[in-house]
Amino acid sequence: MERLNRYRDAPTGRVRLNVVAEAASLLLAPVLPTFAERYPDIEIDIAAHDRMIDVIGNGYDAGIRHGGTVPEDMIAQRLSADLRWVVAAAPGYLEQFGTPERPEDLQHHHCLGVRLGDGRIYRWEFDGPEGEIAIAVPSKVVVDEGRAMLAMAREGVGLMYGLETTFARYVERGELRLVLEKWAAIGPGYHIYYSSRRQVPAGLRLLIDLIRELRPLGL
Image 1 (cartoon, rainbow, N blue to C red):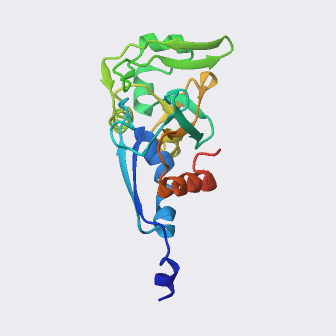
Image 2: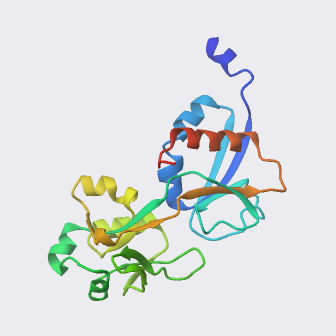
């Protein structure tokens, strides 16, 4: 009975989110158990992919993307600290093909190409003693989905560029190793954005507050 009374006046509703795929696992997954406990009558509908779409025009309440890719006409709130981008590979790959010592060495390696949401192939970004550089790496395999790319990297298909947080558990288990760490780039953190011309659903405000409270990726 106490539990029923506790939630008698709890908020209700449904929140539709369109998020970058990795944000679903790194940012939302850690907070959703607490959210479900606090607000059992609010549904969260998540579309997790990297395609660039008109979030509001397609019926979503909000989107989550890296800062710098958020549409300028939207209200945006930061949800994480800045993110560190690194290169990782399976130990077997490095034993067979060697370890790159500088970003330029990537021209002689197998790299997993990253197809962006707008169809372009991502140029790997680095920040070292000589400043920021972006390199078009040789890619016999190009992937547009992070989980598939991670599986390939762990199998030794090639070097992968991604978030240090994504690699952390696999590095700890010895399945991947980080390379070129001195050239790691720091990029904008995740931001949530929504229209200034629509009323923000109560559930969305509560979710934003909880992420900023729990800080799964810092803030």
